[in-house]
Image 1 (cartoon, helix red, strand yellow):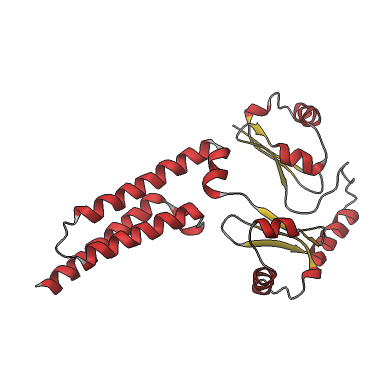
Image 2 (cartoon, helix red, strand yellow):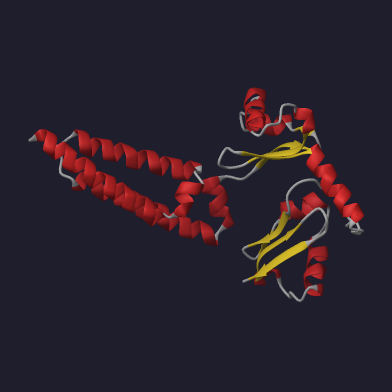
Length: 229
């Protein structure tokens, strides 16, 4: 009889976890941040307790599991509105290699060893650190990189296209200048520009106020992307 109870509870908990993950959305599957990892571990532990303890009422496990799912959904919506909350719960990307040079201070801050770096480089079929132009450690723990060959190809392509070089130089993905209507000071510092310059550029593109912009980025070729609220 106990075996039947455990079997039925296992099936029930399976569908409860499936429902909880579907409620939390594709974000939970595609992007496992520290916060998402904590939620997943807690739901798993609650499921084990309920299955292994047939004498416990089901609601003692299912209730907290659904509560965790609702908590994750609530915080996900809150972080959509506030970048500060996103940085608090998810962290931010950390540049480990810039302009072909290792950032030892950032590696030390992230407790990220050379062995960790070499492992992730090999997973991306890069065997030599000297071949990397830039590498960024994402909040999920994944490494995003661009090799020097890729960078040189883009640079050569720009020259062939006759693109006029912008009045700043940087290596890497597009730099966010505005997010959720707020000017990103770090982005302006990276390209060596000021808020006045940004305001002037926005006005020339028909945007009166940064608060009206949901996302604004600029890449190394000087190409803008502006998405209004």
